[in-house]
Image (cartoon, rainbow, N blue to C red; front, side):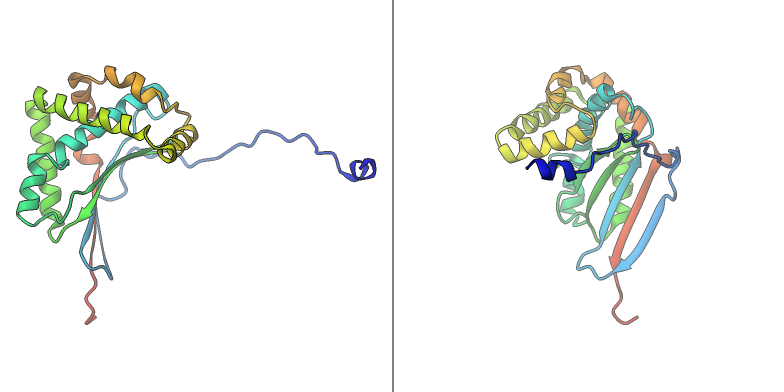
Length: 216
């Protein structure tokens, strides 16, 4: 054992790793992108680029909660906009509603299946503008806020979900318990502020994948 220890080379002191990232851009690259691929049903993604408050960990948790409430109010399964689009056949199922962020980027993604993506995009944008103009309905807000809080609590019923949640949040420098602690600070007024500052038309994109024509 002593002989082995003698042969092990000592590690030299290593300096701190410096990560070099590209400069953050305040504008979107393009508002619309369309491609043709071999898909059974056309796909779409509506995205909003978020450019503020990514360095403030406490603020980003509050904003994340507010955005989850807003997405459910705007296009959740119980929303009027979703019901109208679904009944008209313009949405084939409830879209995925996500907010992703790190120190370098943040964006909202609304992804789903539709044979009329432009109509879905227009309906969503119209609903956003109506919410901005009229403000959020208090009863609707309270109901969705309780629903989102319940979703957070349910996450703690699964060991697998807890592990995934803590690992993901740890990589972002966030304590997962902060979501429960900061929830009471997310008021209707704060959520309306997030709506006006994040859901901006100039920061929105629509990406569409249509079915590829097999004859071409």
